Amino acid sequence: MVDSEALWREALYGPSGFFTRGEVPADHFRTAPLVGPELAEALLVLLERVDFALGRPARLDFVDVGAGGGELAGAVRALASGSLAARLVVTAVDLGPARSVPGVRWRSTLPSSVRGLLVGHEWLDAVPCPLVTGPASHPWLDRWWPVRDGERAELGQPRDEAWADAVSRVERGAALAVDYGHVRADRVAGRYAAGTFAAYRGGRRVEPVFDGTCDLTAHVALDACAEAAGGEWVLVSQRDALAALGFVGAVSPGEPDWLAAAERASRIAELRAEGGLGSFGWLLHAVGVPLSALLPPLPPWRP
Ligand SMILES: C[S@@+](CC[C@H](N)C(=O)[O-])C[C@H]1O[C@@H](n2cnc3c(N)ncnc32)[C@H](O)[C@@H]1O
Image (cartoon, rainbow, N blue to C red; front, side):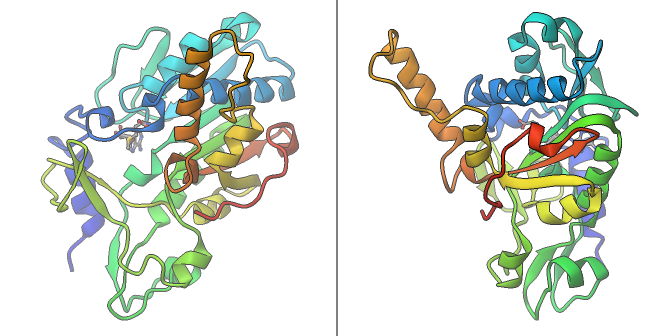
């Protein structure tokens, strides 16, 4: 039997793999950190809440796992201000080549201990996992994604393990995975019966090949990741999470710089668009701090 997970891993992270070679996701698709500064601003609001809940420690971590070109980590570093900025240590983690981003420490492995906020933005979708065609039986599939005759699925256990490992490194604070994905009810209903494995090159969807020439990805079973990492967590839409952090994208009529405000509102609208970036899931785990200090109650994610 073909080991699809190994092929996928080699194609992205082998010696001449797509990400090992230093391909920047930004060259191949538009991710939220590239829309504008608003995602980083929203994460700073969340980081401030974490900081407050931790009692404003002498050192506060922001760790960006799967940092790609370092755009998000760099923006968080550049936008932080006041006492928080003075205590903030920003770390980018990626298997690809280290980038030079002002004020950002670069590593290839996750730090062993984090006090603050760990974020995996579009990280888990790039974690390779087995591709299966039904009928197939496996404890993970039986629990999370029953696969019938002729159906396809991605067996998400490696993502569960990667996320559980990342969350376990947060000593106190929070861990946030932001990604496109699906939930069990929709998988069971057969909405993803063709699987979600896909390849992209130069901004276009292409036929998947395991030769390192394209990005290979699949939607993330974020509900399974949540359960694997455990503790106190919530899984909501980016649309709702951004609004709860104060990013709704409204322009008030008396705005002095109306044009700038309208441009900002349209970027926030893009981040909150249903069926687009707004339908991404935000899986937030609180560690040693109350979840209610980070986000108010919101409807469960249903992409
Ligand atoms: C789809 S890209 C996302 C980049 C960026 N976060 C963004 O949203 O634009 C996924 C990134 O995760 C990195 N990655 C995958 N597995 C990793 C791991 N175990 N540790 C560190 N980085 C990893 C890849 O090298 C790649 O740069």
